[in-house]
Image 1 (tube, helix red, strand yellow):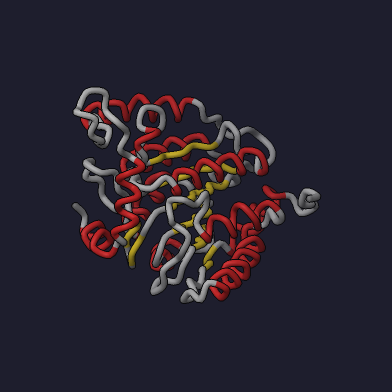
Image 2 (tube, rainbow, N blue to C red; image 1 turned 135 degrees about the vertical axis):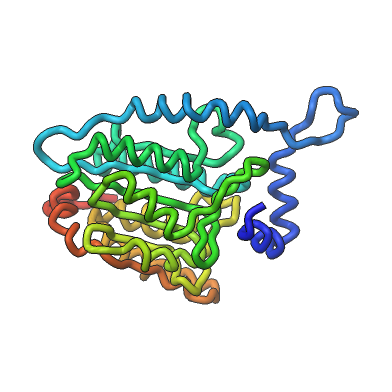
Length: 296
C-alpha cells in the first residue's frame, strides 16, 4: 500500500467507506445468500493491458497538414470511486464534440466496471500512450491536453486500484513521462487536492498547467454520488461549454468555485494556473477567435 493510501484511508469517513463497499457487493449465486464483493482477476487484467492499450492507440489518427490539432488524454486515477471515471468519460465526450478530438482522444481509467474494455490508468500505460501520441503529432503545431483527476496530497496524485499495487504520480515522475513523449506543446489539468504542488515542476512557456487547488489546499466535490467534482463541474461542464479559451474558462471556473465554497462555508481551494505563455498563439488558432458559445 502506498504512503498516500495509508494516510488517505485513515482519514476517510466510515460512512463513505461503507457506501463504497455496499455499492460494489452484489449477491453471489450460491453462497448462503450472503453478499460479497465481485472478484477481480488481477493477473488476467494485467495480461489484458497490452491488448487494450494497443487497440486504443490503433484508433488514434496522425496529424494532418494544415491547421494545428488538439490531442486529448484523460486519466481517472482512483478506482474505488466512480466519480473520477464519470468525469473523464464526460470530458472526453465534450472535447470530441467541441474541440474536434474524435480520433485523437484516449482515456485511461481505474474502475472495476471498465477493466475489460479500457486500459488502466497507471504510469506505464500513460508513458506508452504519450510516446505513441507524440509520434503522431506535428510537434511544432499540435497541442496535447492531458486531464488527470483523482485524490491527492502535496506532491502526490493518487493512482489506486485495489489489489494492483499501482504507484502514485509525483511531479517529477509526470514530468519525466511528458518529456520522454517528445510532445512540446502541452496543456495539463490536474484535478485533485493539493494539485498546485505540481506546478513548479511542470509549468513553463510551452506547458500551461491548471490545478484544482493551491498546493496547501484541498479541493471539493469528490463524493461518489456526484457526476462531477467541484472543479470538473465548474471548468469543463460549465465554463468550457461557454468559453473555448482555456485561460478564460479557468477564470470563470475560479469565480464559480469561490461562490460555491462561500455558500457551503468551505475553506477556499484557490485553483491555480501557470505557464503557457508561448502556447497562446497556437491555442488561439485551435479554438478559433471568432467562436461563439451555443445559445441556451
